[in-house]
Structure formats: structure tokens, C-alpha cells
Length: 219
Image (cartoon, rainbow, N blue to C red; front, side, top):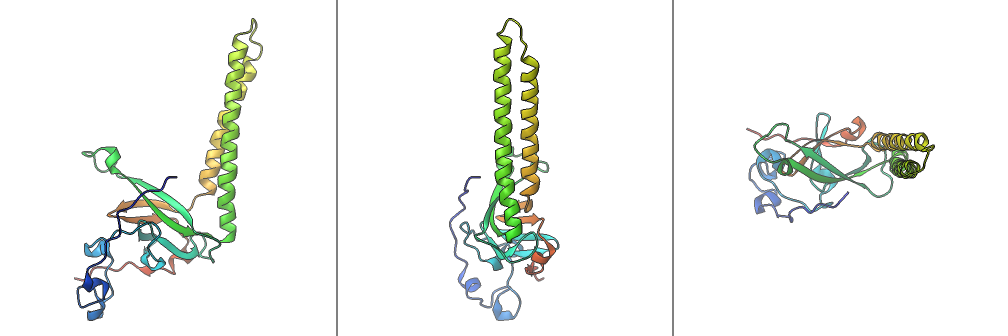
């Protein structure tokens, strides 16, 4: 996964930063507005946002690109273990919009999340074993193809059936390894990326309980 540069940090206006008497500020006793809800958007560098920048809306987590989620396991709500893992999420809205190219509609964002010791071990093993399995399957496929080419050059291609079997077996190993990797390393899924905000599903209820409710714009 590659790092994606985000726009440089833009400081908030003076009244919003100081909690003045502006709309949703501390001066009138109302809770501050989420930038997405208020129409104001401030870009953050990757990893710069604090855990408090994440909110919940039902079963969804809403946060800015580059946010580091609270130090609790996103899969069970337990204490986080070790450094946060980097999750690169993508979302493609081309199924809704047809007048813009797919390259322009495809969006990518990054969040940093914690896992407990148990889920971190499962996640790490899935990446290692899935990668090893995919590599082994690819090698087996290559060996089968090489054997098939060699066998076809013989007067009697005695090894062609074995070569075909090796190629099919290698392909099957690759598929199983990829499925294992996808299922065992699954964490959060991206439901939408809009105006620099991620809408993510898949977090445990215990984790969501520790997040603040999404502030709503007051009429």
C-alpha cells in the first residue's frame, strides 16, 4: 500500500479555534460543529488528528483522512497493543455518477487504528501466511507451465497431464491464499469518502460506545 499525500494543514478561523461566540462555539454554550456538518473543511496531514476527531453515527465511524483512532481495538474494544496499523481505504462512486471518469471518482484515504494483542496476531498471521501461500501458488503455476513447455517438446509428451495438474493446483492455492488473507485480515470497510471524511463500518460495538455522537448542525 502506498502513502497518499494530503493537502497541507489549514488553520481554522480565529473564532472557531478560540471557541468564540461564533456558530457552534463555546461562547453560546452549544457543542462545536463537525466541519462536514457546518460546511467548513480543514485538511489534516496523515496521523495528525487526535483520537477525539472521530465520531460515531449509528454503526458507522466518521473521521477525517489521516486520523488516528482512539487507542482501543477496533474489533473488540479492548486495550490497543503496539503501534497503530495503517489502513488504506478506497471508495468508488462511479455506480452513481456517470459523467465523470472512473479515475476521478475513485477516492483513497488513510486512517490509523489499534488492535488488541489477539486480533493483532490474527491480522499479522493473515498477512504473512496469505503472502506465503500466494507466492507458493505462483511458483507452482510457473513450474507447471515450464514443465508443460518442456513436455510438449518431447517426442511423447508424457508429462503434460502432470504439468496441467500443477498449473491448476497452483492457481487454486493462489485463490485460497487470497481469500484467507482477505477474510482473516479484515478490519474496517469504507462506506463512503466525501469532502475528506471517511464513513467506515465494521467496528465493534464496544469500540463505538467510546466515541462521541456525530454533532448535528443546529437550526
